[in-house]
Structures are given as structure tokens and as C-alpha cells.
Length: 292
Image (cartoon, rainbow, N blue to C red):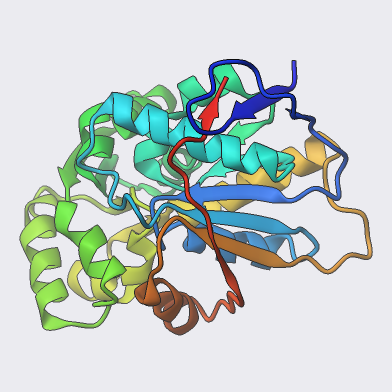
């Protein structure tokens, strides 16, 4: 059945029915803020012919400290906005929403949905040499134990050491990517993981690749950093090819961005850290969008 959306406080089904259309439709991507642009950047590199519609929920960032029911609601709301944009696949470029929101979304939408956890877990299992895998993420992601389950389903003997790093998202959204305060926070969070002998560290939040340089300085070359954003983009490429949803050639894709609140830091981080030209940003009011 096609998904429908309602706006405001309507209780009846909207007259607007949304179909999954053919391959020229965009890839829909959402995150709580700027972090999901790491996924968008990876998609642009791997799939330059694809249109991408990105929603950053800057009005409600960060997601990591919010409860499961709230994350489910946010995920359905943003998923509904992407369905209205005729997205042919929805990429949940947020680890917290991937851990807590995807099941609720799959109940509502017939569009294929890809998260970041399974691709990241698979890459970590392939990268580790000693079976000691560290995971950093938001409180919501770590408490869900989604990475623990995904990694141990692939490698039952692996030991997963997880740590919540709630301050990092706020520092990244503030644009403090190269700052002594950020370096000190990283050391405080990661020192116990390094002491446990991890050889692989999963960046279990799509914001965290923006701190790759700082994380590498602290961890050193002996610890492999696993970027769930790039591995998610690889999974999207495989899905589009397998489902015959790839954009027709030749086609030069474009990136469109919408935010739920104004954010000058969003544009600064996108351009300076990712060299990702965003262009005009749309402002969308997410409250009142409900999937049925």
C-alpha cells in the first residue's frame, strides 16, 4: 500500500497518496542535524548521478538524550516528509534513529529504508584483528545495544566495548572541530576504551566522522576507525543496483537541503569540513506531519 501523510491535527486519511516512482526520484536522507551530511557526501562521491533530498532536524537536535517513543515519532515525521518528496529510498543517517526508529518507519512506509548500524557493524567485524571492538555514540544508541547485537550476530566471539559520548554532537553542531576543548572531551571519553585494548573503533554517530582528525590523533594508527557513513552509502548503492532504482544515465545529480530551523553553523560545517556545497536551504516546519 502506498504511504500517506497528514498535516496538522487531521484524523482522516489525506487525499494525497504518494507512490514510489521510478529511478529518477531522489534518495531521501535525514538526520538530527549536520552529521548526516557525512552520509550525503559519501553518496555524492559514490553515486554522482543521484539526486539527494536531505532533511536536518536542527529544531530538535540532538536526538541522543531523547526517549524511544520520541525518536520513533521524529523518525515517522521525517520519513513522511521524505515520502512527500517522492523519495525512492529513505536513508536514516542517524544512529539513534536507526537503532530506535526504523521498525516504526517500516510499519508505515513501503519505501525501502536503510540505516547506518548494520553496515557499520559489518565493516567493524571485517576490520578487527583481535576481536576487541569499541563503539562510541549517543546515549540513545549505546543504551539500545544495537551495535552490540549487530556485531555479535556476525562475530559471536567479538567483545564490544561501548561508551556514550553525549557532548560530541553539541561540539560538532557548534563547529568546534579543531578546538582544545573538543580534544579534551575526546580524551576523557576514549581513554577507557583504548585501555581495554581495542583495535577497531566504530564511529556510531554520523556526526563523528567530522572529528576524524582529532580522533585519529588520540587513538593513533594502531586503532582502525570505522565510518558508518561511508559503509551506509555503499549499502545504498547495492540496494539501488539490486532493485533497478538507479538514476538513468547520463544524469548529473543534485543535492537539496531542508532544515527544520535556521542554522549558520550547519552551512559552515558543510562547506569547511566536508567541502560540500549546499546552496539554497529550505526551511520546513516538521511539527504536525504525521504518517498514517
